[in-house]
Structure formats: structure tokens, C-alpha cells
Image (cartoon, rainbow, N blue to C red):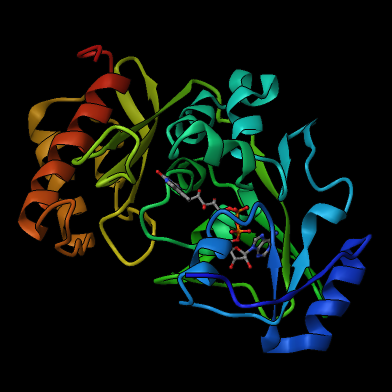
Length: 288
Ligand SMILES: Cc1cc2nc3c(=O)[nH]c(=O)nc-3n(C[C@H](O)[C@H](O)[C@H](O)COP(=O)(O)OP(=O)(O)OC[C@H]3O[C@@H](n4cnc5c(N)ncnc54)[C@H](O)[C@@H]3O)c2cc1C
């Protein structure tokens, strides 16, 4: 199928991009790497007469280390995040998640802003960004906003972005002292397929006991999910009875749907396997 014709608008600044999006309303979309949008337009699942090309705006593809964390520009490619020294040094779990996406051709082109704005429930980056407490910074016709990533995903392919609003960057605060994090993804079809599910975990432990545990999952609800109610692990050592209670808490909050990557029953079982694996890995009980 051929793509229906559209006009590519090339603003020179974020403000100009927002003005163009506001002017053309529902007839326009921003385009980052185009890896999702162009496929959907080629399939004629979507059509926009105007695409606002963010690649013509300079300065949106920078990764900068700041006093309290690292800022990743919206147009930074997946590959740049994967290979970035500040990210690999401060957040290896983020580099790991980006390194698993699709294939190197996709990662070389696709942008961080496009990934989050697409809001697919299976995306790899959101679970680690959720446990790290990242913030999405957006700019729109009504000014700038910082949206905690836990409030960013609103539903299937739905985000908190307002019409005409753009993701400008994502800020990841430095990890708390004595914390460790891991991201495990499970593909049930082939290694470079979309994940069947993804699990990110972050722990802070003292003298072998949990001070804090954060868990986030992808692929098992309409949106990436930050698990709530994990206080039960505080001051507990990592034994199987604590893990079993945790797995029940997780099971209550997920709502996987059956698809070609597995049935609901199978995904619930695999969530238990991978959450346990992540926790054991972080507690040094096993090294997988
Ligand atoms: C073959 C293939 C395999 C893939 N496998 C995986 C995988 O395993 N894991 C995974 O996580 N992802 C996977 N992806 C998805 C990939 O990560 C997305 O295609 C990509 O992140 C989208 O980025 P983009 O810059 O190309 O976005 P685009 O296609 O340009 O845009 C996507 C959406 O985001 C909007 N948008 C873009 N930039 C912004 C912005 N700055 N502000 C607001 N809205 C914006 C666009 O309007 C559009 O709605 C795969 C994609 C392909 C093609």
C-alpha cells in the first residue's frame, strides 16, 4: 500500500512547531523518527495531511548530566541512549532496556519522545523509567509542564499530552544511595520481537533487609504499570514467603490480555517467574 500524500512542515524551533500543530489541529501530528507513524500511515490506519518534523528543530537530541540527574532530549535516538556514557554510568538499567528494542535499524532512528508518546502498553523503556521516578517535560500552547511518568500513560495508546503539546525531554533523577535496579524482558516469539512482558525492579536494602522495593511492568495491562502497595517488604529479608506475598500483590494489579504472545493465564504465570527472578537477582540470591 502506498502512503497518502502529506505536507512535511519543518519548523526551526519548538515554539514554531507548537504554533504549526495548533494551527492545523487534528490534521497535524509531530513526527520524530517516524518508525511508528510512517508505518501506520502506510497501512492507512492513520492519515494526517500535515506532519511537523521535529528533526528540523536543533538541540532536541542532547543527553546532559545535571546536578540531580540526567536529561534526555525528546529526539535522542534509542541507540544514543543505549550507548551514552552518562546513561550507562548512572542508569545501566535504562541503557539495557533501550538496547533490547527491535533491531539496530529501528534503534538508530526511533526517538525517546516518539517511544513514550506512542504509549504502546508493551514498550521497553517505561518500566525502568517508572521505577526511577522519571519526569516527562512537555511544552504546548499553554506553556511548559512536568509530568511524572507514573501519570503520563492514561490508557491504550493514550497519554497525558494535550493537543499541540510536545515532549521536550525526559529527566531521570539519580538513583537513591544503596539502590540497585534491573530490567528483564521476556519475548515469547523471537529475541528481537516486541516483549511478551517486561519487569523493572529497584531495591534499596540495608543489612540484607529491604528498605524499599519498586516494581513496574510492561505488556500486562493497558498501560505500563507501577505496582502499588509494596510497603509490606519494608524491614523484611528476602525469603520465599515475602516474595510469594509480593507476587500476589502484583497479580491483583495486572490485567493481561491474551494475544499471539501468550494467553492471559500464561502471562500471569510468566509475570510471577520474571518478578521473582528480578527480585532474586537484586538480592544476590541468584545471579542469572
Ligand atoms: C520493527 C519494530 C520493532 C519494534 N520493537 C520494539 C520493542 O521491542 N520495544 C519497544 O519499546 N518499542 C519497539 N518498537 C517501537 C519503537 O520504539 C517506536 O517505533 C519508536 O519508539 C517510535 O519513535 P519514533 O521517534 O520513530 O516516533 P514516530 O513514529 O515519529 O512517532 C510516534 C508517535 O509519537 C508522536 N511523537 C513523536 N515525537 C513526539 C514528541 N516529541 N512529542 C509528542 N509526540 C511525539 C507522533 O506524533 C506519533 O504519534 C518497534 C518498532 C518497530 C518499527
